Length: 635
Image 1 (cartoon, rainbow, N blue to C red):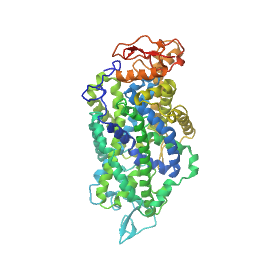
Image 2: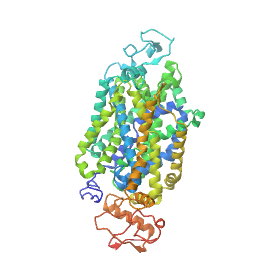
Image 3: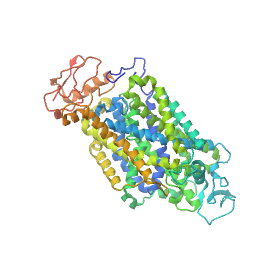
């Protein structure tokens, strides 16, 4: 069914509100799916290593500022946007076709992140399978992957003894934890550079294949299947995190890491990279500008209290990040104490930090094998929640563009996209895989997220109009958004995004992994990858303008206005919106050109009134009938 035919409501048997497209089965389905998407590996994997890289406590200050001034307002805006229109991230830009490139950019970012995100899930699977043993392999120092620097702390009659690889006491070298060597030399088998790829590692490739099979199986039936999976995947991680927290803070030396985490190096706040990383982490963790938020909320029922959900998910997400920081930095502090090295020298500051510190903590728990299995099962569920949402974004974007052809063949679309994702991710299972993953992580969802969010804000709050958007929210919720959101949308958030974007361009930092510096060709590839999404915005805008008629200015104006089919999916909800707009403008001038019953309500900006366009603020002509009376507007 095309968008030119308004979706039909469900039958009276209590089925989906939007029978053609489907809805979440229960109210908690969306809330838990949103929490599962926002609370993912970004909280327990990405947040700690960014915090570690940017001076611990110095990172928390801009992180909280970014949440209040940009994260929460944008989060609410995206959720409201998707719920109001019930469309995917590309088709939803009927609101202003000239900005349709923003939707394409979102899908490209989600697709790029999906490629490497599932590799992290594959690592979790690798560790999960390795945990099924009496002695956890990352606690050993006498294996083929160990070096003479391997140090492992064992309890001997209440004392701690540091043993070298041959079992002899040694203090004349820089010690490296056994968990670090297992990660670097066994799991990754890391080469000396990005161009030293070697062959595909069959064990990692099989784990990656299993990860894609799980994702495909859970998404093949759409939100009906994934909405139930998240009841477990979104709640189980908190149980494991709380257990690790109480164990971590009781370890000897834990206070070293906690002090590093909460006491800021004030001088670091002058570095643009700290502020840029904080903004990007808020965007990455909350899922801003990925298109996933609009996708998930598009399956909500029209009157769902999306503002309540936005507050719960956004605050819960950031609390989880900060809480997981206490977990991992207490462990890093203990490792620092045992290895007798500074906190900032315990592990690489890259994405592998969580795969060094967390396994180390698990090895210190009683019945460590059981806790290892539970922890990596938790890591798996965290990753899958976010992967579900990002893949659903890509799938929904493709299907909503051609619903009459692809919606009946959704299983084939899901299968095809999963196969493509697996093949593109295979290079990350080689010995240079970590370098490729770091390159993708650095550029695919970096500055492009801020560019996309800035364009999103301009399109909705300035081109479409903040007043109109507020009325749309009132149609759904019964009240307009608080003044806090309005001020952020039109002033604080876009100004902050623009400032950070310019600051990061001026003080550009190339990608690194530990001490490794990437070659120029890799840098160029990364930049092109990051720009690939951003460049779609002006490219699609030019195409949309060229499709219009008239002078250049007339073409731009026409491309910026909502399409004839913009609005809620169901006719009943369109009638409700007409009442909200009529309630503002009163009844004075009859409108002409009422559409036939059951047809879309066209956004007629020219025949509704003889006054200048700027004197009214409605998304389309509210012509038609309400309760048998002609609908009119007061000017």
